[in-house]
Image 1 (cartoon, helix red, strand yellow):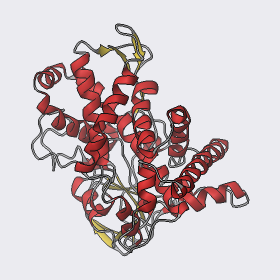
Image 2 (cartoon, one colour):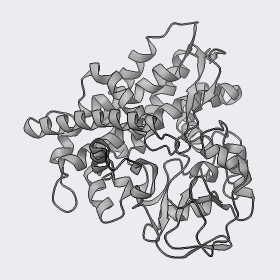
Image 3 (spheres, helix red, strand yellow):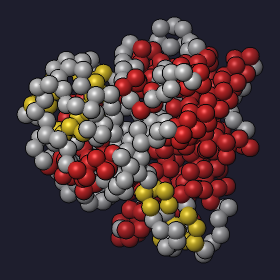
Image 4 (tube, rainbow, N blue to C red):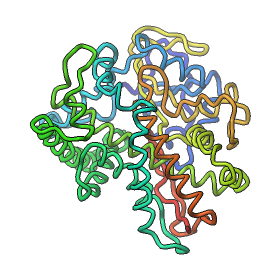
Length: 417
């Protein structure tokens, strides 16, 4: 990855705090995002990323709209491709990870994504509501009433893993392994994770790949009533089906992306409700406000902070030209607080009119699992707000955010139910 701005670039160098942010040293990114967004034209070069950071709503959205000009075929330019070419296990990891449809452009992306076209619609995901309700109730019942506990490492992390495991047809006893595998694989997307930490993350990710490969083979031989059985039989728009390694790569992505999104939503949402008791009371009195509240949680503190793209031709963004071949990091988290698009962008407003945020990004790469994440969020907050109207923040351990530069969430969120 280049660490020098391409010749002809007029983008200003990002200010010093940004480099700390993308090196995983800064917990609260939003003041830095605001500085980037409101300086110049909102486009800056980062030596750490070896790429341009794009922060304004219109520009971030436009990059998602035009896959021909802004390519997603960037796996070998991004953190997951970092490897030791002499290590056969690293090469085996790359063989699977490089097949993710998030790193593909049409028509390859279109073919792979079409396999999921029927299973993650808003209507189709409603069939999983009883499952999400059961899992949520079972997991929250583990925790003592009136005593302080950290909701993040247990409940918030366990709900999405338990749900996607059940949907895929994974036995309940595998949930803890699935959670560990999910964290390990997610860390391979973080450019800060290098050296021995990366070696371990790859080794653990391969355990996930191997297990999913076994499930795919088993469901081809003996289908069941689960998502993997459905997907191995579903034809793409080209009339074929995904191969084993293609399918296991997408399944691993579903696990990681679904886990990150819902876990972060729970931590961010609870924090916002604790910080805005008046809004919380209005939602408790009128649960029809909850879907709008979840959208506002996703807007103001989204799980996904950076997306990576590559310019396929010279392109004008703001007041200068981005040369062909340059990497760009559109920042949905910065765009979601752009005052050019949202009134009172740093304020938690429920309901917020015209809340077309970019938490799930935009265009052909809009998150395929967004309906499931929204369903999980609605069920979780319904459960907490109805069952524990006196829930309040705890003090130990201290509230901490994660510092992953790509996907940011909450490491700890103490509560008392």
